[in-house]
Amino acid sequence: MKRQFLLILFVLLLVGSWLYWFQWRPVQVRNYCDQVAWIEADYKWDHSYNNVVHEDTYDWKYTQCLHSKGLK
Image (cartoon, rainbow, N blue to C red; front, side, top):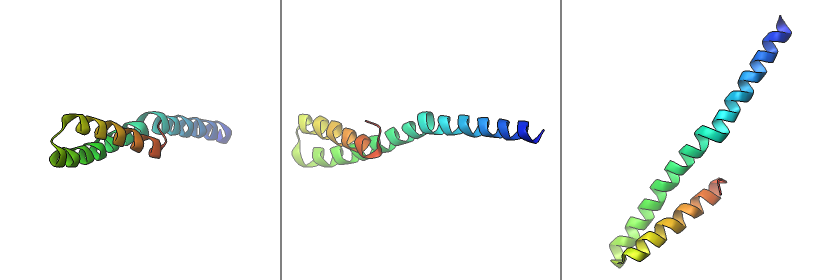
């Protein structure tokens, strides 16, 4: 009985860890990076008045943030 309980507990912990690492965590990191990238891009937009710089800044900052968090 104790061995069966430990096996079930181990499987639940394994599945929970998998869901966290591959499902919940990437979504949270992408949301965070999106917010950071928009803040930086909006700042550049206010000072440059050039839409190309705005898009380039957003893409670069978003990709940089994903790299720093280990997603790309």
